[in-house]
Length: 99
View (cartoon, one colour):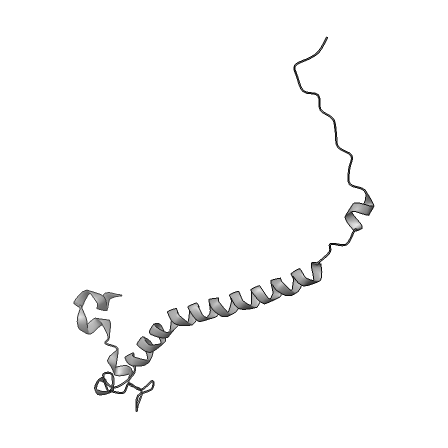
């Protein structure tokens, strides 16, 4: 009599020879993966720099004198550092003084 249910036949475990066999081309793969890693790190650094430049420019413009913010050609650093451009919150709103 035949049964319709499939029978399970276990596969033999991989022997030590199969595990210890060297992979051909592994050295080329290592060099390729290192090159790809280097390229991806450079690209990610450029993208991060692209996002950070406006924030750095904003912070440096915030401490320039007002007359130097829109000069042509633009300068990265102003002639002096003015922290007076930042207003005390208590002078803008009465309720801000309670903080």
